Image (cartoon, rainbow, N blue to C red; front, side, top):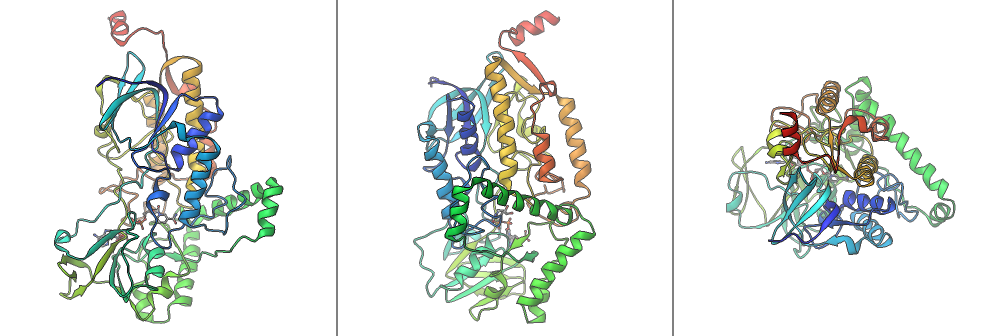
Length: 501
Ligand code: NAP
């Protein structure tokens, strides 16, 4: 195969992060880039998650980019179609379409140290060569069916929450839902209105907190449209409101008890039956798993056509789900709201860096990076939503925006100074990660529950143990002294080795 084109930047993934990176690259005057998107449309997780009730549990004013404010959000917590519309609107406004290559599945990237180039292999197409790569493939991209015994024998209809089948008619059907996480609590209140019966298979009850959703009236929208500073003040208010919650949600402190009191009050207010309340009471610290923000879930569970099943699933049978006490629950359809295959101990695609090192091997016991964005030995490669960049209390978009501005500054430095390599120093990276892991020990995520944030042996490669303000601050400035900086004319690796020996 021949190489077709040398790009300044290959952006892998056309979701929120990839689109944001592309906009900021353009605003920095960098035009020679492509967004390599495996799907046929932009939007990433918001293109894929179209299940009924799909919405974001962070207020839209904050779950958006500060550089692309939207005065027209219809409500506090907008639904997935509106969020997808926002993403598509940004792509149109910033004329990103000519940069997007749809159906472009990247199968691996290899760094050519002498040339200071990444070779990007693409399934069924010529490879792409790029000076820099932005890996924006997202942590929640791969829907995962659980390894439940007998899953292949089930003869009814199977639907994963992240790959919704809009052609399936739930009317009059007996539906089973496996999982009670953030996706399930949005789906179940919708399903109970259509299906004949809904059985909810719960393994672990989560902390449910109220989510007060309000429609945004025309006067408020007009205000935000005509007085942009009002919009930005509203965003700021949401931001600091969420920051204050970190004291009880991120860290395992006496304030965590206050969050739990709010959860218990919601349970008492919405669930009358003491036995059901007991079944729905979590046995771990609030925040350890993602908080579930909903006012509709508990009422849905108590409808006549809905039933909570707490017996463990033993296996799937051809016509339903068998639980450990020997009962078979017949179901025409099973909805798997069982989450995603999140790579915490590998890489989403094979990545080969300097001297042939393989990132998946280095990350085999848990991923790490410098400030979540760069990894030593893999120059000119930048991650969005990389290791330890997950928020538990604030908008992921705030974190993403900080990553994007940092990596665009780094890419700008590479191009402006004609650098062959910008490779983060190992000692800086190690020091950073030692501090992160030390700080994580005091957080709710590491307080003893099982969640997708942790590897099987309890290593937290996912979450950032601090305020969003701290995270943003650490990425505000690109400090070149944190990197090995190699100029384009510095001679080849072989010549450098020869010169030393
Ligand atoms: P999730 O949080 O990983 O929840 C998966 C659910 O499936 C859990 O209740 C889990 O039980 C259960 N489960 C998994 N395997 C099972 C098995 N073999 N048998 C029985 N139950 C099983 O997945 P999700 O709800 O799709 O959410 C994933 C992430 O997406 C969230 O953490 C969040 O970051 C994001 N999300 C965000 C929003 C939003 O509004 N912003 C909405 C939806 C999703 P256990 O708890 O016992 O493991």
